[in-house]
Amino acid sequence: MQGDWDGRGLDVLVAERKIRRGELEALSPPDFIVDNAPHFAKPAAPSQGNSFIGLGVAAGKAAGAARLVRHPDEGEKLQAGDVLVAPSTDPGWTPLFLRASAIVMEAGGSLCHGAIVAREYGIPAVVNIPGVMKTIKDSQLITVDGDEGKVYI
Image 1 (cartoon, rainbow, N blue to C red):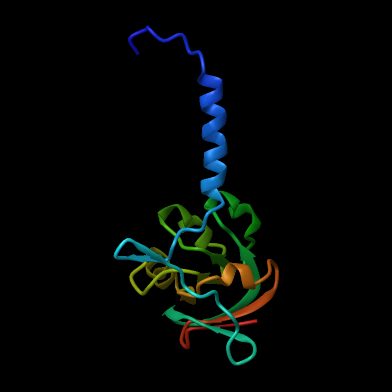
Image 2: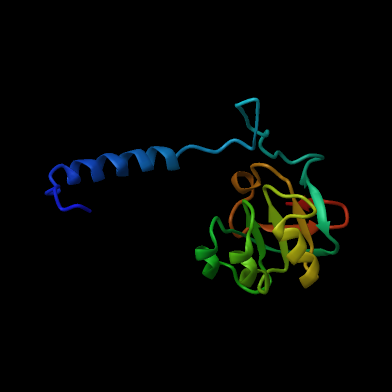
């Protein structure tokens, strides 16, 4: 800023930071922290044979092809009638809800963004199923029961 640095070493600094960023992106953040200790939720496993139990946050039942969407920029994968399966949502995801027949999220509660929007749009939703994105396969046919808080595979 003061004009007294000629930029030497910048390429090394940028390369080091790119490597560090890659290392950090490979880490999974903890689900919660207690007394500075990270805690990870156990991954979802189908219970009772063919269903996942979560928290039903928007009533109704719908079925469709699961679309695993990790970021709203991947929204073109979601077609009308598909079930949106996401880690969590925020206002940037809202346009995708218009195409979804149901919502499934790894994290969330009854007052999370996805739950509120799903109720407003009348879309069944089940949240709080840790690791569901690693268990459900993209394009797999699933049924979401927002009344019971279950996802059937």
